[in-house]
Amino acid sequence: MIVVTVTDHVIETRDLTKRYGDAVVAVDGLELRVQRGEVYGFLGPNGAGKTTTLRMLLGLVRPTSGHASVLGAAPGSSHALSRIGAMVEAPAFYPYLSGRDNLTVLARHGGVGEERIAIVLAAVGLSDRATDRIATYSMGMKQRLGVAAALLKDPELLILDEPTNGLDPAGMAEMREFIRSLAQGGRTVVLSSHLMGEIEQVSDRVGIIRAGSLVAEGTVEELRGRAGLRVRAEPLPEAARLVAALPGVEAVTSAGGLLDVTVDTARAPAINRVLVEAGVAVSELYLQKTSLEDVFLELTANGDQPR
Image 1 (cartoon, one colour):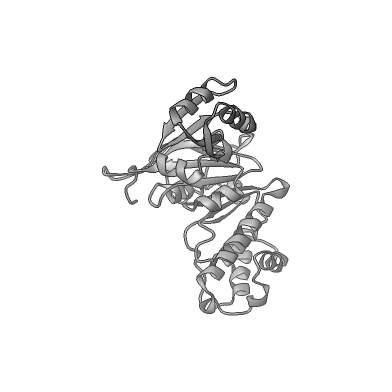
Image 2 (cartoon, rainbow, N blue to C red; image 1 turned 90 degrees about the vertical axis):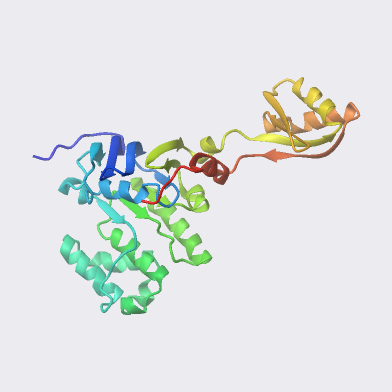
């Protein structure tokens, strides 16, 4: 009997763990929640456990311990798989068949109407190369065909592992826009990548994994934290004293001849006015915000081993 649980979470894991022997812990007590209808960016360095996690969610790898639910059912169950499209690691196709023929094989095997083939080929921009053999495709074209294959079932949940591998900058930009469009209409997309820009531009929420464990989760803005102001002024100690005394200023720190001010950025004109009127020479005053790359590097530094 297949047990299906109704939940707002398309993916939910509790203490999910995968060990290989005694020495290698690929995924370590992972707690993951993916909400319905969002693009969830799964970000981590190479070897952090991203692909192993995705393979467990698809039922391709059995966890050592813990629990996972996908679309309210057990990973790998027919109920879950019938509603999932996935591209995990590099897609593999019959090289002597055309792109269209490869998708035809997959459609027949999966019981999908062949009218979907033309739709997905057009969606990924491969209609004009559909009759060419896979052996003539570039790596980027194979990635696009892999996404087309994942879309054949018009899935409720789409899992994509490094979908922009092999694409040139223009192709990467097109893929990002395409991924955003896929999330419309209630479809959920899980996008796994080690590229900060890719994740930052398309994701509603982001989970950062290090050494098999989730170390941060939230919207891009939540992870980057509140914006502040950076001030370069002389004399700096006097500027720090004046700024710290202003209403709404939460903190003032000095580093490298600059002041980092935690405050509503709308207060910038008032801060500048107070300093100038006090005879402090202000040479720079600008918005300062932590980048997602800074957050990522801080959270993942010195924490991963190849897996």
